[in-house]
Amino acid sequence: MSSVIFLVDMNAFFISCEMTRNRHLRGLPAAVAGDPDRRLGIILAANYEARALGVRTAMTVHEALRKCPKIKLVPPDHDFYLEKSEEVMDLLYGFSSIIEPNSIDEAWLDMTGSLQLFGPPLIAARRIMQEIEQQLGLWCSIGISENKFLAKMASSMKKPKGISTLWIDEIQEKMWPLPVDALYGVGRKTAEKLTAYGIRTIGDLAAVDESLLAGWFGKTGRLLSRHARGVDPEPVLPQQSDAAKSIGRSITLPQNLSQFAEAEPILLSLADAVGRTARKNNRIGRTVHVVIKFSDFTIITRQMNILPSNSTRHIYQAGCQLLQRGWPAGQKIRLLGITLSGFETDGGDRQISLFDKIDASASDKRQVAVDQAMDQIRDRFGEKSIKRARQINPGENAD
Ligand SMILES: [Mg+2]
Image 1 (cartoon, helix red, strand yellow):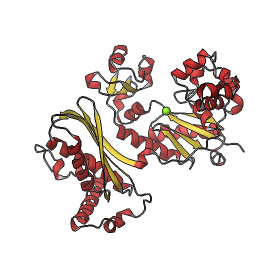
Image 2 (cartoon, protein in one colour; image 1 turned 45 degrees about the vertical axis):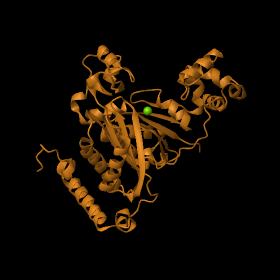
Image 3 (cartoon, protein in one colour; image 1 turned 60 degrees about the horizontal axis):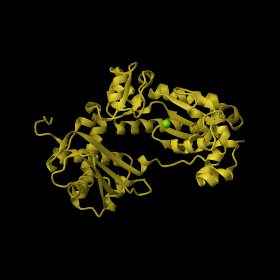
Image 4 (cartoon, protein in one colour; image 1 turned 135 degrees about the vertical axis):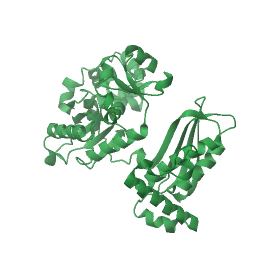
């Protein structure tokens, strides 16, 4: 039996995530935009109401406001989108165990072995779409074919909420008439070159000899030729997403920072969020990485190794050293981020072994106990129920 591959692509993902937690955005033109206050940023994702009025991804905020003065703009919250993305992936694992994320908002599923359980491809796809909508309040499009490439092509044929097949025996009718720049992977420059050679449609490309294309474009030429003919032998590779290789948090600050003392509580709360996620997932990392964006938009990163840990204090202490090292006098900081990576490969039973692993001083053991106690309280009473002493603003009531 030949393979059945799905590409599930979330529609207008960032703004759709925002709409799940903010009812006021529903039914109105809205978009996620970098720096909406300063009118400098660009549109990162517009909902369909805004698109109907001409707002597009990568348009400047200024231009979007001209097209649609009433558009609601929301600043990006990547941690939230990552969380939502993980919820989508979790749901998809209910349909297949062979899943390869292609980006934060899309993934391939090898459905070959799942169809016995979920019915023919179109029925199974409809069920996935319904569950994503009902359980997560999000929309997707699904492309279906025998291979990854054609599934990806199919997913873009009907949006939003479209289910499209592009089986190999359908490519002549559905794919070959499309302009050559509609082929996934063909950028503007390649398209211009192809047009110069008289190749206008994907069908034209499929008709050209593969070796001729290899002469013009090298390896890429061979790939283009195969894709145009619907050939893609790449299997769906279950992958650890990047999110699983590192755990990071960053914040764009409401006001630029000029003093180390102002940065400390922010770094501590970021380190705490990172440590807490690592502890929840039983991950112990050996590399701490700090990213600093200055007010002139230059970015620097600094990293160092630590004894394997997921303790807030260890991550924070390394972060402080890196921040001091990377922050030249007089510069102002507008974004600060910290990441833990270099995880030990096996994740099991780490909480227990952490005590033995780090040749733990009494204070390290105490730190592990403090982290665990704080995590438990926040699990029960919510994130804001407890703060470390340094995170409490002097003017804020600590109760
Ligand atoms: Mg996508």
